[in-house]
Each structure stands twice: as C-alpha cells, then as structure tokens.
Amino acid sequence: MRGLFYVLAAFAVMGLAFWAYQENYKTQAAIGDVRDLHGQIGAAHERLGMLRAEWAYLNRPDRLADLADLNFDRLGLLPLMPDAFGAVDQIIYPIPPILPITDPVELSSDAFTNVEDPL
Image (tube, rainbow, N blue to C red; front, side, top):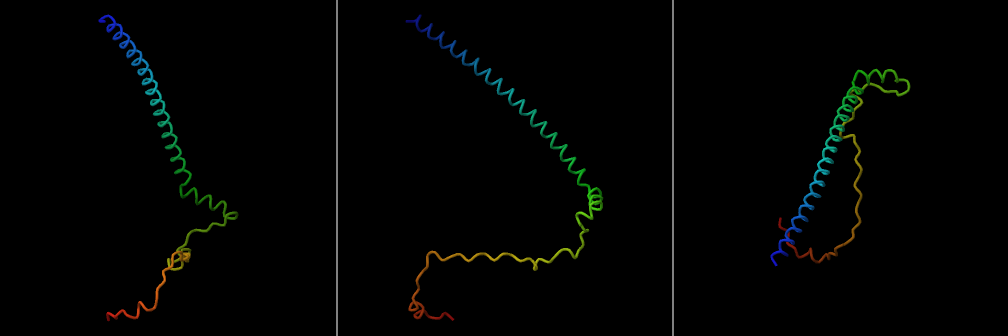
C-alpha cells in the first residue's frame, strides 16, 4: 500500500512539474507579446509627435496668410473684421416642436366653482 502511494505521489509531482513547465512557457510568451506592444505604442507616440509638429508647422499664421493671398482670386477670402460678427439676439433658434397629448385628463367645470378664492 505504501509503495502504491509513493508511485501515485511521484506521478502527481511529475504531472505538476509538466503543468508548471507549460505555464512558464505561456507566461514567457505573454511577456514577449507585452514587450512587442510596448514597442508599438512607443513608435505610435513618436509618429504622433511628428504629426503634431508637422501640423503646427503647416498651420503657422504667416504661411496661412501667404496662402490666402496667393489664392485670393479663387477663394475670395477676406480678413476678419469686427463688423463680420453678429449679436447673440440675431441668432434664430429653432422652435421646439409641440408634442401631442397622449394621455388627456378630463376636468369638469363644477370642480372649480366650489373652490374659495384665497385672495
């Protein structure tokens, strides 16, 4: 009986060792994937920084003014003047739609004749 127990314990230890070995390789693969993702995120941040710098360079006011002057005949752009802006009271807001009455309440005129006037 003791020998059977030793054999079963040895098989259990070997099975657990095999499981730990497999889990170790899965963990190492996951760590490698995370490193790759960190590298991709770093490259994306570098590209984003470059794109922001290019956008700032292309949107310089002096460059945009020169482009507006070069293309004035085609675009018809004029400089902003104070009289180009309107007042807030000139804005026409849309009127909200009147919602249909879906659950009407019936009132009788007798209910209001017996009420005393509080004033």
